[in-house]
Amino acid sequence: MSKLILVVLSLFVLGFTSCKKKDEPDPGPQPKTVSFDLTYSSQMQISGSSQPHDQEFAISTPNISTNSAAEFTSHNTSADRVDSAYITNYNLTIKFPTTQTFDLLRWIRSYIESEGSSDFLVQDIDTFMDNGSKVLSFVLPKANFKEAIKKDNIKAKCVIKLDQGPMDNVTIDVDLGFKVYARENQ
Image (cartoon, rainbow, N blue to C red):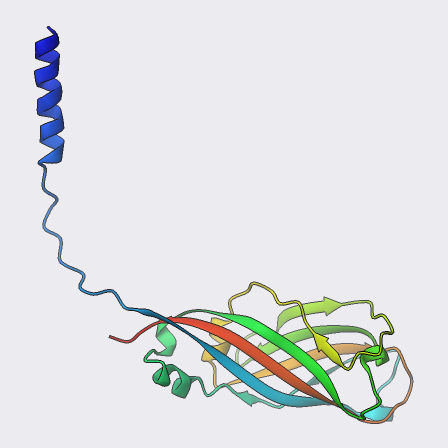
């Protein structure tokens, strides 16, 4: 009886290991994945005495050209082959007046805007410590910005409420960075 079980088990194992899969077409070489950085700089302004310190208001950069088509081409890829794009930095730096700091803010919500899309909230800071800082670096979400970087233009936008009354015009440098992952063209 044990020989019979051994023979059946052997035939069973042989049957599975010798089975051939259906002939499937060879998919050919798989595209290589590339990654590259996109960086952008611009400015936004708070218009001094015309801004009320007890109401929220929005400021934004002018349109920032993504130059994405040229960037994709230089990395041998295209917009339809982008898998993901993650924000790597979003920094604000007060450029003028040189004595101004971010202590002027009561709170701030920062966004990325792109053509035809709703604003994407990057961070909401509702409390500011008076620490005299001229630089504000946002904590970055793990969100996919691939649709934004495929557009011709993006904007950095902030909705703010001031903690101080009338002041001089404030010029703020804006630096944005993205890491893009895409499949190479074949």
